[in-house]
Length: 97
Image (tube, rainbow, N blue to C red; front, side):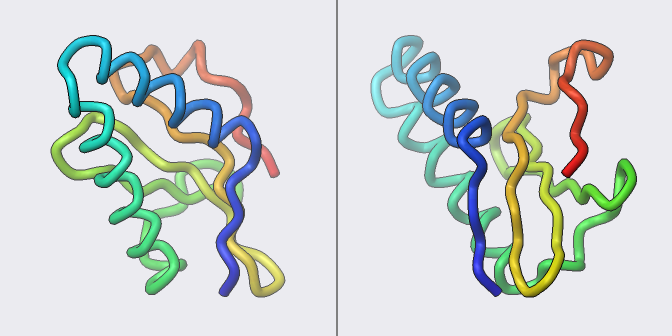
């Protein structure tokens, strides 16, 4: 299956990595590594993560409190958002495809 990140998911990751690197050099790079490991798991087992909203699935990263929200459809995986779990879910944007 082909994995694709929406622009907002890319922006989520870039801004979070930048924030972590500002806090401590190299920490943002470790966040990116953790996200990439989770994305590899999604590619290998796209339907293993639980459905949390409509058809949207969620996988959590290791070592960092982030979740990756994605859809599986028509032979592709579309990553919608990469969000910090400490954020109030009520402030999250809608996660619809």
